[in-house]
Length: 282
Ligand SMILES: NC(=O)c1ccc[n+]([C@@H]2O[C@H](COP(=O)([O-])OP(=O)(O)OC[C@H]3O[C@@H](n4cnc5c(N)ncnc54)[C@H](O)[C@@H]3O)[C@@H](O)[C@H]2O)c1
Image 1 (cartoon, rainbow, N blue to C red):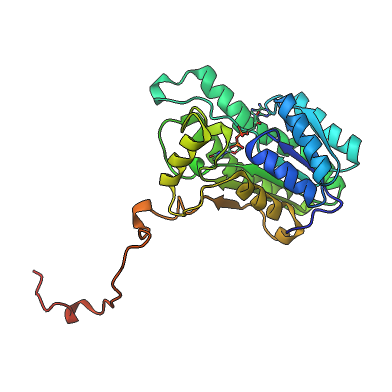
Image 2: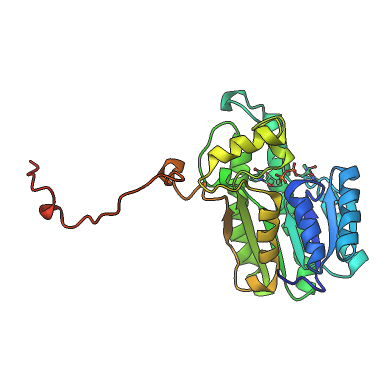
């Protein structure tokens, strides 16, 4: 669909869900990929699959909240492939779940460390090799939970809102270096992160997601991978500082505003009110 030939990409959270889908798609689209995750078994498997289906891919164990591990990750990309063009800061956790008054400082901080600090560290350390390569594309995963108020995921939602704002700030910071900085705000996407939040298995999760959005198709990891591929590619060469919402219309308006499938509706025209029913309103 879009060409990443000759480019080198790092994808954090690459062992599962959206990061897995992006790792495979980016490799198929011509990039060499470094898959980064805490989950070694699945991460190694994704790197193997990506290598089979496309270009070269390697796995690097990484906790995105630890600066030294992000530095080692960037070094792995430049040592193995000689450059860095794309940094997809995608790793995340649901983190602290429940009533605000019950959120411990430790749970709040760990959520922020993974979902926000991890993105900051990715941007911080990807900038120099991208500058050396003559430019690049930083993409991060925010969430519609960071765009609209919601209850139950306070630290997560606050971190995701901050990711969108950090994206705008970093876009200004790196514009002169031809480094584009964008983020994606997914709606509900059927991935394991929702186990324990929206259901205990894929079927339960997907029936919950069906009610969340007007669009009939349930969000899948490849929907986000496709958006990330576009932002990573030269097709998005003039797009920076943007939050790309990919949510099946979940934030377009209330779900109830969408017409029900199969319901017959009458077409009419509402002209000036004085020509209407003729009834006087006091
Ligand atoms: N699934 C959704 O509905 C949804 C909606 C909006 C945003 N998101 C965001 O999308 C991103 C991807 O999540 P997903 O839905 O694919 O879930 P997922 O659980 O399938 O994938 C997340 C990956 O991040 C990894 N990870 C967690 N903590 C890490 C750390 N400290 N260091 C490195 N890796 C770590 C996990 O091991 C996992 O492989 C996350 O940032 C998530 O917050 C998800």
